[in-house]
Picture 1: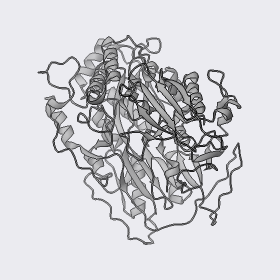
Picture 2: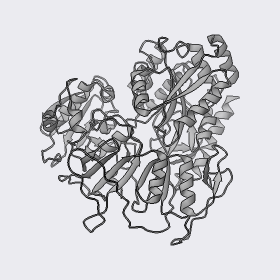
Picture 3: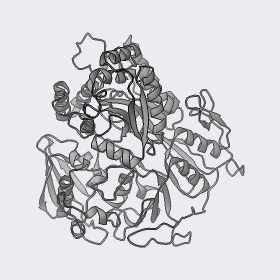
Picture 4: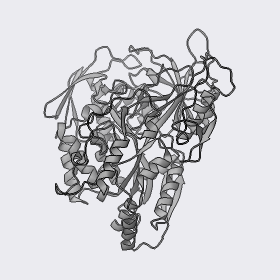
Length: 630
């Protein structure tokens, strides 16, 4: 019975490019600069924004701030990565939306055949914003500081050691094969610091480091921008006086903290140029206003949206307004949709001291079997159900045929119809027998469906075995931190309703983002809703969900808790070349049946920009390359 389900899921999907334009909805060019609200800043003075011939007014980008520091080594958040990418260069990087191979950044690199050595040669002529040349000493200091601070970036770097060869050459050594290292080094958390400046302002290798205070008001990198002012509400950037790369189209950038509702109003009124956190319904409303179309109500969410494929089922696309039309319902705004690399998931804590029920294997199984991932993804819209923690678009995803390159994604028909420039689908469709085997299954066994199916009867039976009697189970989430624009409160409400039919009394418990993140990182929540954005686009990054991994520890899941999964984790980490997709698929299938995580959906991101912007160079790790916006 399960085999046709898997095949129908694959037939329904189409293969698309990682980024596609959902609608380009301008009606007329506009040269009016967005309004600027003065901000109280620290650090150097902020240049006055004008629309004179001296240059364009600052680019204004709005997003939800989730960073707590501008120290690149300490930040590990979406908005922090966005800012660090503009201020600091990394040793490697990516060329546009192509995530298949890391390119040279600050350095050219060569990986040894066995994957244990990485030789780096710094580009000549690179300088920090104060004119100091970038040298191998700066790289070694940066990487050693990463390890000394013992944060998430240190967990990613592991046992890698750096050794200076000369002022422009160094080697990175790993005890085991580490083919993911070039991709890892592109993460903005590894932005190379001016060691002399940082040491002079509290920088050290170890817990005594206090440079984050200084780095919150000053930048010490070689990136295209420097920090010219910052407070809790906005960060101002200006082009670095020593930058020799391609000149940014906007010499000044203001990145402003704003909830999605304000992003919509500021974008449509001209007070902002770019909005990064739109929900599907908000994107619909902007599209409707831009085309002059009447709005319709989406049956999936009840939200008012644009008529068309992303709105009411069966509706036809809205007719674009005539260029130059003066209808008051039109707006020179472009909306973009892209299937993100984000995975939304539930986490149950394994420590009985945190919660006896979430630590109960039968209760955990009841939650896992009681969630209908297809229904969740349909309700949030423009999403696909998660088959595992690795999203489609990254090698090892359970939704992709073996060997699918990282630059392709599979999307549901409702989303595919809104996207432009489709990539030709595979010439052959993999059948069930081509799917990675379930761990421990015999060759004759029927493969499990790609996306685990809901089993309501099995969930209720597991709950009965657990002894649970309706005790309230708090579901913690960050109320002001949407998942690619999707309100977390909406997802929590869906989870509550689905598990209520199993017999589980879920109590949604929204917290401010700062408090929720602190609890999540400290592993203090019994049951929580979160999302994972890749730190680097390689499947090894997702071993953070393994026992003893970064997220595994947050769930109270230690190495040794499950010997079989430990073995599969080691096999996935050691896999190379063509063996990697199957190794990571086997690991994910084991997680789906015995892990403390329930992957829910892979959402789309919805971005919008005003008439002064024509191109948004997006990336799944740092969201947007501010220096590349044009």
